[in-house]
Structures are given as C-alpha cells and as structure tokens.
Image (cartoon, rainbow, N blue to C red; front, side):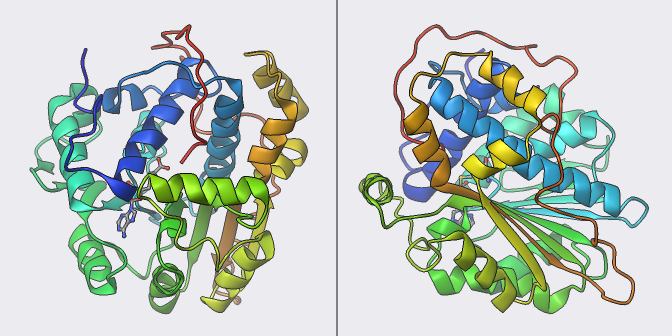
Length: 352
Ligand code: SAH
C-alpha cells in the first residue's frame, strides 16, 4: 500500500527531512531481520536496501537505545514512568512497547509542526496504530495526538517556552521518573540550545535518565566529510564542533545537572556490549566486505546515557550503558513479518 511517507512533501526540508531518513533506515534493517519492528512500515515506504554497512549500524543503534529504555522501564516498574522523545520523527517505540504491554504511563513525542502533522495523519488512517490508543479517550487531530498514554505534540525544542508548554499540555509530571530519548537530535541544535534542553529537565525533575545517539569526531577526514555532506543537505550538524568526543558528551551531561553519564562509540558498543551470539546472528544476515569502512562509520557515532537520581532513595543505580545486550529491544515476535527482502544494494549516506 502506498504510504503517505514515501516521498517527503516539498515543504518538508532541512533537518525535518532527516526524520524520513531515520525511518527508512530502521525499516530497511528490520526488513532484513536485524531486529523486529512491526510498525515502521506504516510510516515509510521500503526502498532499496542500503546494504549491510548501514543495516548493521542501525542494529547497534536500536540495540543501544533499546537497552537503556528496557533498563529504565524495569527500574521504574510501579512508579508511573514517563518517556519523552525529543525530535521523535517517525519513531515507533511507543507502538512496540504497547504491543508487548510495556508502554509506560505516558509516552510523549515532540517534533516540529510539519513532522507532527504528517505523523498524526498517518496514525489517523492506520488501524494498527490507532489500536494502541484507548478507544474513546484518544483525540487524533490534524496537529497533534492526545490520548491517555500517548501524546504527539508540536514544539521547536530550541524554544524552552514551547518545550514547556507542549510537555504541560501533554500531561508530563515532573514528580514522576522520566526517560528522555534524544536520538539524533541534539547534534542539529546550536550548542547552547542543546544544553538548554538537558537543563530544562534536570531543573524540574529529580529523576531523569537521558538516552542519546548522535555523531562524534568531526575533526578527521571522515568527520569532515560527514559535516560537509549534511551541510550540503541543509541539515548542518550545528552542535557537533562543541561536543566532538565521548568525553565532551559526558561533560555536557554533567554540566547540565546529571550526576552520572557514560558514552561509548558504536564500534565499542558492538564489540563489548552486544552478546557474541547476537553479533554472529547479525553477521550471518548479509555479507559485509567493507570492514574498515564499517569500523570508521561506527567510530563516528556514539550512544550516551546520563542519570539524575535522588541519592537518598536511588532508582537508577543499576542502569548502565554496558549492561549486556543479547537481542535488540523491542524484539518482535515476527521479525520478518513484513520482510520484503529488497534485492537492490546501493550506497547511501550514513544513518541520520
Ligand atoms: N528520533 C527519531 C528521528 C531522528 S531525525 C529517530 O531516531 O528515528 C531528527 C528529528 O529531530 C527530526 O524529526 C527533526 O524534525 C527533529 N528536530 C530537529 N530539530 C528540532 C527542533 N528544534 N525541535 C523539534 N524537533 C526537532
């Protein structure tokens, strides 16, 4: 069935357009069996496979962010946890969690108005997506989705007044534990605005976990090409020069009020955190010739976790970026349910 997403409308450009790239990248890797995802195909048309280099990168990204999410939900069971996704794009985590009965009390997605309008329109026409929203209580409008557990709101998060209003309208509660998902978004913001997003949460809530994923290392030849490619596509990595290394990722979180922070590049994450059996499984899916390119690519992306907790009654003590991952999360019961195996391979730009 043709999807509304197959071609981004011309008025969606620049950084917003990267939501389409992210969604297509995840759909392609899911279709190849790298991880389960029964929902992304509702949001985007499946194009030619980007090949093992990119698909394996998506696997590590999904496994890493998913592991933090899984650990957060386990640590907050019974505490009415909340997840806030900043720059959510067409991410499907809410539906994944609903399908397995693990959705938190509240899941809020924020993005720019044009992306939110497209996502709302797609949700409104897809019974499989509507099914996760409680009947009668959901309001799927042209510019937002408001339901008891799931809220999709427009906000430019560079403006903290907009961020605050959208979260208040969504029913976000500063007194309950929150996981903030920052998957490929802070890197597009000017440095001071990225820090302001992190600080916004730490100044209001005593228990916050951050899960981040984005580019690093702009200074070498690969990094310079990465910066230039995205600048040419009109989505410059404005935040990268100020936060270029793992250590700067950690320092930024500390400075923003998070007592504990960790960051790993994706190559290290793949080699040391993902279980050997899972590495072997993904390696068997597609032959990867370009090992050096893959290593280079993985070294230019990182995953970050930061924690702000109540020291007297800690909830997040056991959370760790290094907690072993045997399978990416969430795992679908039918990993290849919509697995149209695209035969074509063509090089594409790195996952966004
Ligand atoms: N997190 C999603 C999408 C990543 S693409 C995923 O991983 O699949 C980056 C997203 O950030 C885009 O949807 C873009 O519109 C959003 N974004 C970038 N700058 C933003 C801003 N200032 N306010 C709100 N959203 C923003």
